[in-house]
Image 1 (cartoon, rainbow, N blue to C red):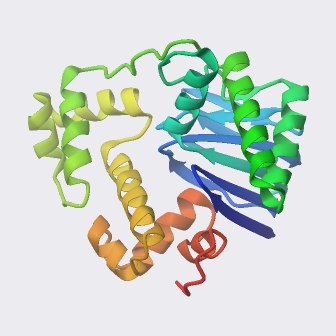
Image 2 (image 1 turned 135 degrees about the vertical axis):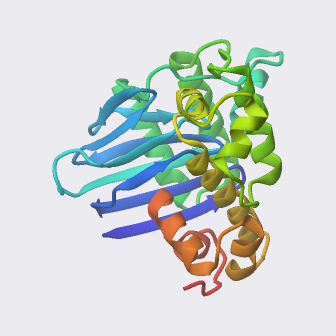
Amino acid sequence: MSLRYRRLDGIDLLRLAGSTHRYTRHSHEGYAIGIVEAGAHGFAARGRRWTAVPGRIIVVNPDDAHDGGPETGGEAYSYRMIYVDAGMLTVALGEAAGHPVPQPLFAEAVVDDAALGRRLLDLHRLLEGSEAQLERDTRLLTTLVDLARRHGRATVEGRPIGHHGVARVLDYLAENFAEDCALADLAALAGVNRFNLLRAFQRSMGLPPHLYQTQLRLRHARRLMLAGETPAMAAVDAGFTDQSHLIRKFKAAYGVTPGEYLGRAGRRRRLQ
C-alpha cells in the first residue's frame, strides 16, 4: 500500500493506493470529499449503503457517521480525499453568493458527476504539487463552490435529535469528552432511561455515545499534536489511557497512524 498525506491551510490531502484498510465507524469535523481511482469503495452512512467507483464523488458531511473499506471482499482500491474545514466552504459559498449563507449540506454521499469528478481529481493532483499559491487558491475555491452549488442544499436542515435530551448530552460530551462518564449519568441528564438514550442518540448522530466521545477525543488529540504537543501528552489530555490507545483508535478511524498523519502534514516528529 502506498500512502501520502499533506496538510494545507484549511484542508488535508490523503492519497492511498492499493488499500485494503477497513475504517471503523467514525466522523469528521469538516467535509470529506473523495474520488476513487481504482476498485470500489463501499461505506455505510445516513442509514444507507453507498458504493463509489471511479468517476463518482464521495461527499461526507461534517459529523456524518460512516465506516468504509473495499466493496468487494478484500480487493484493494485506490482513492484520493480532500478534507475541508466546514467554515472554509461556508465562507467561500457566501463570498460567491454575495451574502452570508448557511453551512451547505449534501443529500447524497455519492454523487454521479463525471465532469466535476475529473476537476476534483485534477485539483487533488495540483494541491499535491508545487504550483503557485494563486493557482491553488483559485482552483480550490471555484471547484468547491461549484460542488456545493450543484449538489449541496441551499439551507441546512436541523439534525433530528429524536429527543430534546440528546442535545443536553451532546453539550455535556463537548465540554467533558476527556472524562470517564457512565451511561446511566448521561441518561439521567437526558431525562430518559439508558435504552431510550441509546436509541435516540444513535438515530441522531449515527453513533452510540461512547463512539461519539471517541471522535471528540481524536479531534482534540489531533489539534494538540498539530500544535506541537507530544502524542503521549495529547493522549492523556484527550482522555485516552496511553499513547498506544490513541494510536489504535486513530489508525482505525483515519487509516493512518498519528506519525503518518503528522509526518506527511509537514511535521517530522517520530511518533511510533
